[in-house]
Length: 305
Ligand code: NAP
Image (cartoon, rainbow, N blue to C red; front, top):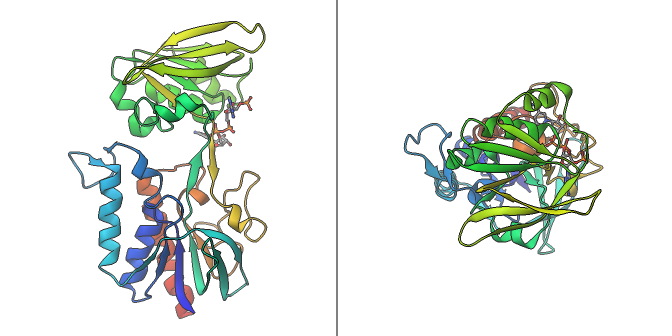
């Protein structure tokens, strides 16, 4: 049986691995379906401390993995399909290979995935004009028109943030009322650089090598129109990748793992969580890394006890 298993290799999982490795816990790190996590899919990361010239997301995650490998961390390229958790352990993880791993302490750092529209053209322009992260990619659109799709708080936040760079921001929402909280909605509505296209869905993203615009359809009139833009920000919310642990760990109604106070402890003794799968609010590489460090420290203390 392993002392510690960490599931997920984004900034939370890899930072937890560095800490647990340095504490001589010989952690096993299970990569998940996207080794390195969401950050591997972004281009330049300009807001991770220590990289004044910015760092490519893939390179940053490769460096984190290399750092973890210096501390007796064992890597397993696998996906957890389901889990059998027991208060105080041992916990069993069933992997996609059919293998089962048992551990005393478990750190769940499985991250979240952006919700996408599901269009072929959206997929084709991902990271070349289509993004799900204004904080990551907004600065690339200085002086250019962009669109934001969605009507929730994330969409309003992204739209407001993008007005720092973009020449104009058009929000496309499928209804005639926003889901966003009043304060966030008012802020966006009162921003002169933001305009709204209501009752509309995006049917296509088009362009040659880069995005030139989108096609939208009014769901009430059926009318089709074109909006010229260079950036398309999809803000339909995130989906935490916590399905394998559903029903065993307390989660909110959207699947984010609930933590005990300011710790990384979940509702199951001996199971800890870190990063985006337990963080609806911040969802940044640096906050995930911080949560990973906390989880490893909590595990070390819990095992000692
Ligand atoms: P959300 O509240 O679930 O909103 C998602 C938005 O995307 C909704 O407007 C929804 O439309 C739209 N949408 C979903 N699927 C779609 C599709 N296939 N096609 C077109 N539109 C689609 O997600 P969120 O905005 O990420 O917020 C999640 C949680 O985080 C909320 O509790 C929010 O308050 C919180 N949050 C807070 C802040 C803040 O306070 N600063 C910032 C961000 C997020 P409908 O409205 O028609 O369903």
